[in-house]
Image (cartoon, rainbow, N blue to C red):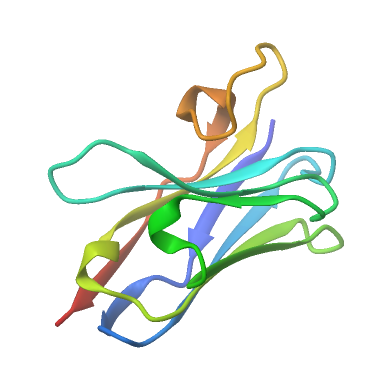
Length: 126
């Protein structure tokens, strides 16, 4: 089984940047699409970004397009989320997930991912 662990979150002022990492251990993630989701306070988990196996296809929710960049380093078994121009609306717990291949669900559906990290909190102050 694969274990995922997010890191890099914290408290930051609006307008600043953070880079989240999602390190995988136990098994390689190089053959899987990986996704980033977030759960804002009091809200449901929502899709943020995804990246395919070789990084040639990335997708984003409209609210982060142009500000966030998802990337991966398969040699390090790690996926990243570079977050620039952060706003208070980006405050959330961020999760990375590994895609499952049993059902063909949309990339922005959390059920398309079967292994998750414990989450990493990002707080953006005004």
